[in-house]
Image 1 (cartoon, rainbow, N blue to C red):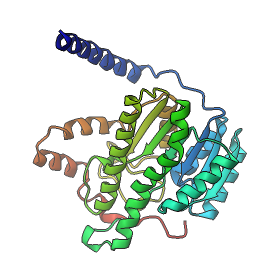
Image 2 (image 1 turned 30 degrees about the horizontal axis):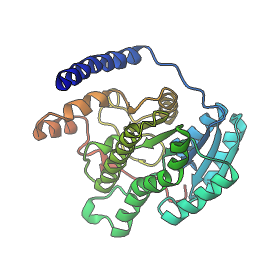
Image 3 (image 1 turned 90 degrees about the horizontal axis):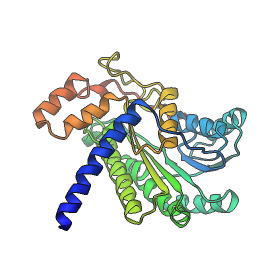
Length: 305
């Protein structure tokens, strides 16, 4: 009897959740108020991190900015204060170093308070073939793009669990579910970050901590300088993304408690097809969209930026 009831419950809820997602696709859900929330953003000295800081500050949130680049961090602080109503705090932090993350996290908790929205945005990319990539840079990629998520969660998640309130945001990548030539380390780090974020989300659900939300963001190449030189094969179909657009989509996803965000939307379909297509067919699709040679023109962000 339990089998019958649980199967019936499964079918009913599956239909409900599918219909709910279709409705929200057409009619966006109500956006939550982030005014007064303490939002910590790693990699806030440039790119998407900087834009998110400005936008969250404008919504009245207290923003805590981490970056290894003092000059970039100072610029973000200035822009956030000019455009925002919330408080702005900045800290130099090397997210590749465990003890540095814990040390600065303790400083934030003492000086600002418990972080309620954590955005793991810091990331690096080498852009070389695997056999041409120095071991030190391979390790650095994993430390910044993956392991830093472990340490920030360890630092800030306990307070969220205690309050049953918080939001964990993982800025992953479309390279987090699809292997791409020349960025094997980057893909591995984003696969890991995505899997980690999903697993922690499942842990929170198992603990019945319904007040702690998770948003995983998987964007295509963004025009921020990180992937400078990369060109789209079919820009009308799959363009290099505008940073402002991406930042707006991320803010909306967080405020609507959206669990998974692919940018652009075509990746929802590619992600679906990837799950059952034969490998040769998936490679053919990847080649059609320019994924096989996308890194051939890669230059990357200048070291001074």
